[in-house]
Image (cartoon, rainbow, N blue to C red; front, top):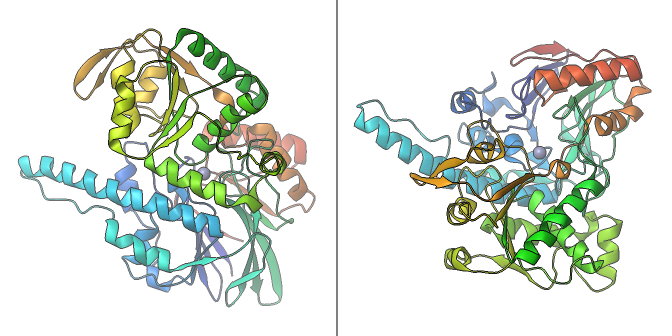
Length: 465
Ligand SMILES: [Zn+2]
């Protein structure tokens, strides 16, 4: 008997976690953090119904926090088995988990100070910096397309998902007595044609498919149209000598933006551009993107062959120290500042906004999803006054939203990714990692195009495969 349990990203987009139980082994696929929603902390403390010591292995699809962020909660509870992922995922996960541990600890300190004042019992942080090394020590690096035996009765093979560096779709092959069958976990599926990374590759057909549906209800604006919009804003800012602030996720989005701006210069669409990447995590991640050249796409190789770098150009500065970052607050003239966090919930970008939102010549460009209740969302929604560091700030800057730089495939991209699997056809298809509106729209399209009826599981549901 083989069972698949859904313990996260079921009807929501964060907290990815699946549990596969066969007659001889138990394997977890992703152990992500819940983010954004009000109940996130409570959901993060709710663990799948298994003693981590009994897990045979964990498979990690990619390094985003909503896929790897709770791995330390397994090791602090006794898990000592292997964590399989690609080499780039292992390196990115280290950057992300160390950062997350700092944040968990700092948040817990702040929260506990509040609890102390009201006489309530203290709360433990989810984990702390010393909990990260044991996780990293368990990582087993597997290359794309290699067959790896991960337990007595399960093999796995990873295909490039084209989402962030090292991201994968995972195909597990279960040898269940006389029966052998395949299960595909899509992980997060990237966008064909997006920069630096190769396009997503669909795994071989399988009996069961678990597929993401983040943007299952719509297509993004095209990348080309979005590039034109970006170029237009940069040109305006240049002629006005204005600042452009781009809040961006440190991993993936920042590297894409640097690439696009480099292309404007390499193709002669701009003559010069001063760009500052101001986020220590983004600087580290960009270093990794630069090192893994064998994962780059054709255009990135072409640029490298002409002795240039897809992630560097004259005028681009990677800012490390806090002093350098502060100096940018007073600097004048046209400059682009790409800084985290992507939703302006913390980090250096908040300081840049604090100093520049009041200036009508400033441009602020949002390139990613802005969650409810975040400063980013308030700005995108057009609030004229926002509170930053306790001070009311009048928003006079021009606020732009560019929708076409997403790292997730839109509806058509998801359907195209699935098409090679439809021939099987799979006995069961599960839509996860999407809100209900998105996955029911995708489900309807899949019925129409492939004549299959996907299932939309809820948290805690278990299915016999
Ligand atoms: Zn992701």
